[in-house]
Amino acid sequence: MRPRRLIGIVGTATDIGKTWASAELARSLRSSGHAVVARKPAQSFDPDDAGPTDAAALAHATGENPDDICPPERSYTLPMAPPMAAAALGLEPVGMADLLAAVRWPEGVDFGLLETVGGVCSPVALDGHSADLVRLADVDEVVLVADAGLGTIDAVRTATPALYRAPIVFLNRFDQMSDLHRRNLVWLRDVDGVTAETTVAGLAGRLAEAVRR
Image (cartoon, rainbow, N blue to C red; front, side, top):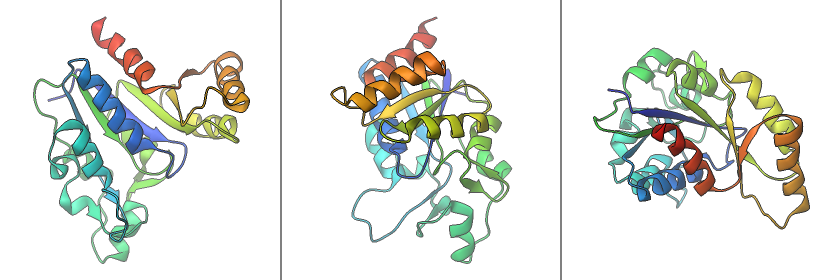
């Protein structure tokens, strides 16, 4: 079963805010009456980190069980790319086909959020990276989470060619009072022709419009 709209969430780098953006997007869409679930086929983390895992953060936003978001056997207690973490822990790294085969979507879902790991070319499986994951899943939209500050233009330009379709760029931590942030936004939209959003509400509205059509 496939959601009405399947959204791939990728990032320009690690710790860019993919999970925060995914969780807030889920909350915004749910507040508008949409049924939303999230999946993160693999995750890795530092067990000494006091914060929740990505799956737990997404579960809190969607009302799901974290084990439904990321299978326990694909949750690695070592902060490395998942296939590297699996190898370091003495586990068998998984291939992309098996990773995707484990993703299950319940019936009656308006939006499925498929969150990747690291940057667009970060390994998510033994034989593929995050951009491969959203391509093989044949998502309806790709959301590229990027920082809003110095280096934004280069990061977006570097990440975009790896994606199989033009993304919606979400500028995380955008500060309307920052001249640099505003100029980055204008450059992306007017010079590069990028579709860009700076607020979760704006991103949710753009995605929801596609469902209404």
